[in-house]
Image 1 (tube, rainbow, N blue to C red):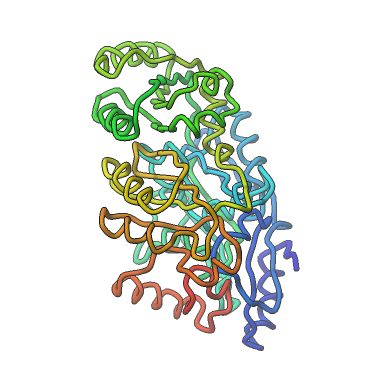
Image 2: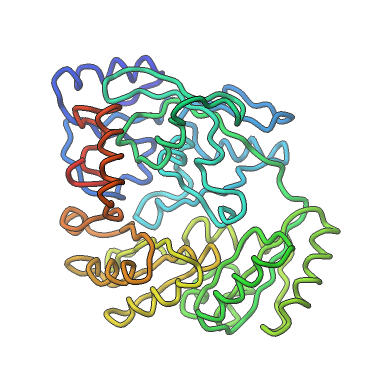
Length: 403
């Protein structure tokens, strides 16, 4: 079922509320294989609710219907030399979905954020206002067109990252930023994981406004489509600088001097830099493979290598680090539990959160896909669920088996 307007979605959902039948909520379906498998009576898609209905470049604000393709949003912004600063990642292809099909609604529903999150915040930090339909089939709005407009509970933040389990987003209003005039990437070669993470953290402490950091071990770096890097045959530690051309040139030279102890980097210009960082956004270095499982682990940056080392004591892995080591993408061989027991043990010891992104449906139904909640967090989530979706009809069990 495809709703074209908010009121149509409301009328589609109302009979299921009356009959107390669960419903799958999705946009284009690019992330439909992420989360626990669900048993629902029907699927309702917002993909037909598309179009940008308000864009004011001088005010740096845009409003779009939830089903608007992200590609359309970014193309419109590029025409005015602007961007979504949090550079949402496209994780659908890593789970067997099609590249470039995600919608702007799904970006905020899943709080999808890329490498620039370390400096500008997550997707939810850029969301200004929403229109949505709750699990009661009630239409509601929250927020507006400016940041300082919230009194009481900030529903925008509460719904962002809820994966359609609380309400169905129908419209989103968000802030945008000017695109940088120039991008440069300093690439250091041959560093082991712990030294690569050390370098990234050192760079972030310098006053040079680094906007992205990533470390790819040799085996993963060899998968890059960016030929100048794949041909190096070594691990890659990348530091991104953005802004006006003169500023980037000055900061690049100053940073090379400050980090001289780590060696002399390769300098990538704007075109090659954009190619490389877009590869990371698409997770193209960790492509879909039915024989592997994929985990997303968030932890304290300097503890990233320790988490990986703890996991590798039990199973071989392919990894790459983003967010200065605070975000780790971990690929492991397919197994009965996708390595969940050992991975969650490693995360429990060193701190962090682990989410199973790719695995067989039977595996996803038998293990915790999202990070298990603390008693306090679970109590808060249950309270939100009782308010927005008391009958537990929207994407039931997708995040947690009992919700």
